[in-house]
Image (cartoon, rainbow, N blue to C red):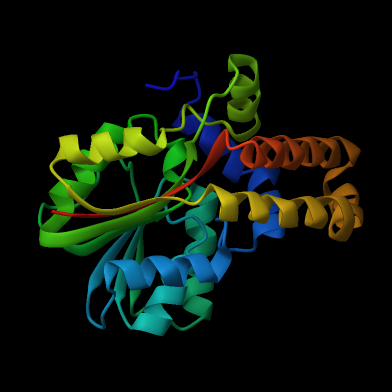
Length: 263
């Protein structure tokens, strides 16, 4: 099991309630996950979204993926998140988009979800469960709230190779991650929770390409804006962050995992 670091829900809230949330949106768009809409559509196809399904988006952030799948696939979405600023923006943007009849946002903990068992057709997540401190508890809750036969589909930042401890500590510190799971470790957690794994892919090559784009965006396109709005110090932090993660991804030390499982 990967080493755990002492970052908590409060640390994550401080990141996304502060400049960090604004910075990540500027770099990654309001989707705030690698791969943007293309990755969202790939996940939608893999879980077989159909009109009328009820989807739970766990760690829904600004709600962009929820809005995308509600509009394109005509599904009902419940978004679960614990960062107040993200929730407030998600609710307002969803209302502005005229999709609040299809999407509801709920404040809550992914490891103790405020929903009854057998509620959702699909449980969904994109590049956010690396913030959750206990992956098995999360997997167990996903299993509980899914209807029998329902599917779980998610992507997550993962460890894909040997990572030196000092580098791992710096990577985690830069993002306030308590720990990332390994590619195989996520599969083991899902099986332990009761899931049948239908698909698992190591998408590190695509993930590394995303960081190539983030490097260009931070160091060139957004440099004046970041410095003007956040200052030289945050620009330096952002530059170091994207280069560190980019190098680690190209070295196949960290990456993105893609998982589809069934209850």
